[in-house]
Image (tube, rainbow, N blue to C red; front, side, top):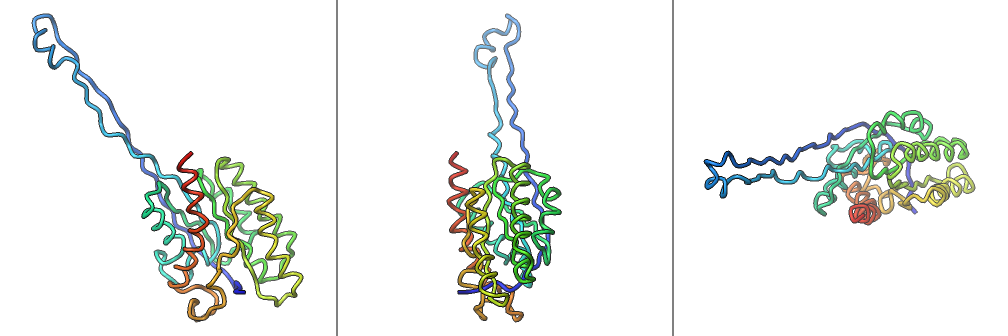
Amino acid sequence: MKFLHTIRIHHSLIGGLFMLATVWGCGSGDNQKASEGSSQSSSTAETPAAPAKKQTVLFYGNSLTAGYGVEPSQAFPALVGEKIDSAGLNYQIVNAGLSGETTAGGKSRISWVLRQPVAVFVLELGGNDGLRGLPLKATRENLQAIMDTVRKKSPEATIVLAGMQIPPNLGTSYTKEFRELFKELADKNKAVLIPFLLENVGGIPKLNQRDGIHPTPEGHKIVANTVWNVLKPVLEQKSAN
């Protein structure tokens, strides 16, 4: 079993695209030009249809989401964005993270972050709570409050919850309850669960930076695949509706 050790992050924003299609026509003149009008009077031109505006997939987490220690383009959210483009899906990625974020911090700023509607909300918080041994009751309540705000601000959004695990330093009971709270919340909120974000990465030295905490670029590629395996069906289903 691999384990998470810590977390940090930063922001990036992506704008939308707006286009307008116009239709115009010209009619025939007076009776003196009726013969000309027969061929030209009702000509109509249309601009090409505007492409549909890209919907937003918002990643809301900490240093794992932000890609601490690697280039932003190497972090797993950006890599997921590349997979979205390759699949021809009409979505854009927004990475909204904060270094060292806890669930309490996430709760305090979620309303500000959700100033625009999102189609998919990927929630990756809780690791710092567990590493600090914070009361799990508060962690549950904060994660629930974040999801409640998402439901209020973007009622049609699909919530994807990233599961976390921690080392057994604080005892097997705390560690087990921490691991299980993510599935409990996902089931309660009908959210899509990523069982463990760092599957096949956490605790593997060659896939983590020298601090033993944050994934290397190669580690982020594996995390991106883990996320994509869960996210792709969600995006395809929403695109089909």
